[in-house]
Length: 281
Ligand code: ADP
Ligand code: MG
Image (cartoon, rainbow, N blue to C red; front, side, top):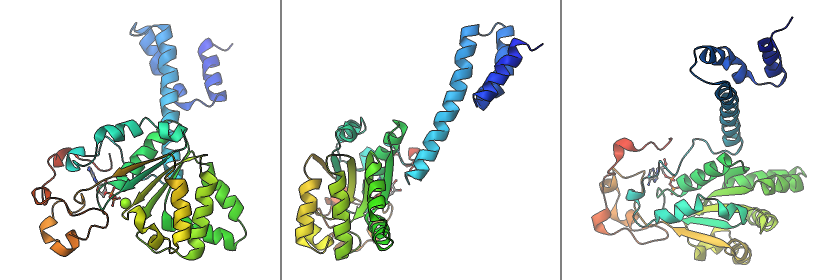
C-alpha cells in the first residue's frame, strides 16, 4: 500500500520537480515539529522548485544572449559619471522602450560605461523573461557576411530579428566594408518598429558616414535608428583608466572622439566607492 507521501514523491518525479522532491523530507519534518503549517509547506516546496528553475532559466538565457560577464545597474557607480542622469537609466530599466520597440543609443568615449549599461539593461530584460541578443557590430557583420556566402542570409536575419532586444556594441571602432554596411542596414530595417535595440558608439552620428564607409547607407541607417530613439551621451573620464589618468598624454586625453576632455577638476579623480564596486556583480 502506498502512502500519501509516496504518492507525492511519485508525482514530483513525474512532474520533473527535483528541488521540491529534495526538500520534501525536510519540509515534512518542519510540519511535524510544528514550525510550519501545511499550506506553508506547499508554498515552501513550490517556491524551492520555482526559484531553482528561474535561476537556471536566467543563467541559460544570459549565456545564449551573450551577456556574460554579467553587469548590473546596481554595480554601476553613478557618482563616477556626473554627466549621466541616473534617473534616466532607472527609467530605461523599466523596459518600456523594449515594449515600444524603440532604440537606445549610448554615446561616449572609451571606458565611460556604455557596454556596462547596455549589458545591464539586457540582463534586466532577460530577468523580465524577454529574449535578448548581444554582439559587437563587427561580430554581427561578420556573421551576416558568412551567412550570405553560405546562402543562409534570410535565416540569419530572421534569427537577429527574433530577439525582443538586440544590443549592438562598439559601433565605430572598426571600419565596415561596403557589403557589411548593407547587411547591417538590412538587419536594422527588418527590426525597425518591430524590436528594440541598444547601440553603443564612441563616434557621433555626424561621423557615421565615415564609420560605415558610405554616407547614403549611414543616412538611411540613422533615419531608422533615430526615429523613436533615446540618446544617452556620457561625457566623462574612463573608468578603466581611473587610477592612471596622469599617465595618459594630454593629446590623447584631448582626442576623445565625441566630447571635449573633462574639466581639469575631474581628471585623475579616484573612484570614491572603490571597495563597494563589483563590476561583475
Ligand atoms: P565602454 O563600453 O564605454 O568603453 P565599459 O562599459 O566597457 O566602457 O566599461 C569599462 C569597464 O569599467 C567595465 O568593466 C565596466 O564594468 C567598468 N565601469 C565603467 N564605468 C563604470 C562605473 N561608472 N561604475 C562601475 N563600473 C564601471
Ligand atoms: Mg564598450
